[in-house]
Image 1 (cartoon, rainbow, N blue to C red):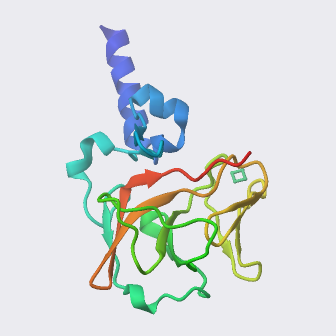
Image 2: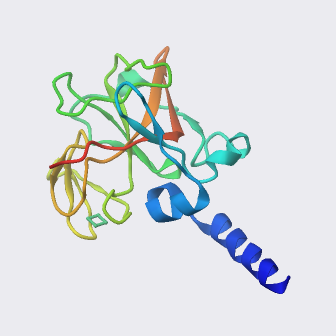
Amino acid sequence: MAGSAALLAVAGIVFLTAPDPSADPLLGSVLGFAADVDENTGEKTYPVAGGFAYPRIKAGTFGGIFTLEQKASIFTEGDPPLLVPDGKFYIAKVPPNASVKPVPDEDDRVNAANIMAIYQVCPHLGCLVPYIASERRFICPCHGSTYERDTQYVRGPAPRNLDQFRLTVVNDTIVVNTGQRVLGQPHS
Ligand code: FES
């Protein structure tokens, strides 16, 4: 009995304190975070922390929906990406010929503004990745993984491009769903 109570307490602490179990495949599997795999494209979508308690995640809180004050039309392809710290993502407009495209929204539409929401967490070991304006690239301070402004992997130990969140643009308003993360393409 005491052992069960202790186990429950530990499980509760893990759940309440883990910032993003889906960033850790092992912890994600223990807690039951499974990838949602698109049958046609093979694309994997992972729920984020508390995904199974999704209705309780407030808008503007990580794991929920973010509606940005900044309109889509103010972004240009030359701007440094805009960091939204509470959502752990950057907003960047990319050129039509970018090597990585914005992921489609839940209805499988890619926004015509070519805007992407880039997850700030490095797919190597989870450090927050800053954008280095002088290099025009994201460079992870932990082990040096480097990514183009459009998330494309350049070098370092990271296994793939930076991840993206699904995003819609409606009447110039950007809405990012941080409950819908799409993994970046692995490199060979
Ligand atoms: S955590 Fe980013 S390169 Fe290791």
